Amino acid sequence: MEGKKHSERMQNWWRVSPLRRRGVERLREKIKKLEEEVEELKDQIGRDPLTGLLNRRGLDDLLQRYIEIWKRNDKLSLYVFLIDIDNFKQLNDVCGHKKGDELLKTVASSWQNSLRGMDIIAIVKEEYGKRENTVGTKEFKNDDGVDIGRIGGDEFMVLAFTTNPEVLKERLQGVFNKVVEEVPDVSLDILQKLGVSIGWARIGEAVEKEVEDLPASELFSKALNLADQRMYEEKRRKKAER
Image 1 (cartoon, rainbow, N blue to C red):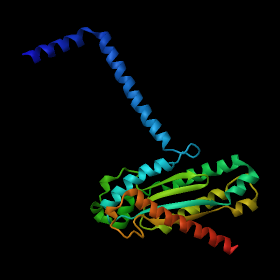
Image 2 (cartoon, rainbow, N blue to C red):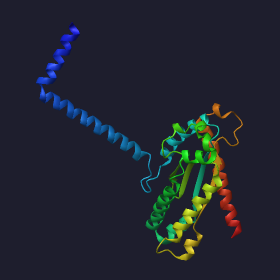
Image 3 (cartoon, rainbow, N blue to C red):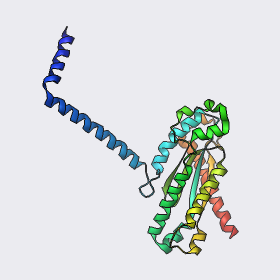
Image 4 (cartoon, rainbow, N blue to C red):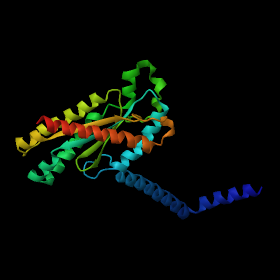
């Protein structure tokens, strides 16, 4: 009985208090706007301001989710790629930082566009065909599977579920070479010295323990160190061949 009276009082309050009702509606709108602004700020914090790519924080957040999915799907291989632009400092020194920033933005955009369509669902379909349902693609968003970020200066990182890391490496190199061919107002001598050194490693590679027993940070750290070593090996090889 008491509950019914309370309900009637609330209905009467809502019906006879249009000012209060509008106040509540305005408050709801403000809360919704604040929530949207918080989400936007979260996205900005995880983005590199120059290129718009993920920054190290954004990549770390993505990595946590990717590794958890990878642990539950042993048919998938997750790789980390490290990319360093060769002789970028010379471009900055001779042509100025503005020209260097222009190259970084153009390369970042071109890489990002080239990686679209390499989502995990497409990869699984290509590799496993009709057996795709056994790989757990429902855990992924539509564009999950590969992403690129800038981790500082002329260094970039790619996180990718792929069945052929060498093909992805060649794609990244090819896109960079095409961008460099179209850079305006830079001498041919400098352009010919620009290139990319890329090292990659598979998450879980060279790990002696069961991967389920290791935290994501340790799995990533080991793969990152291997990718870094391989990237600098490629740099040294290029210098030796000159």
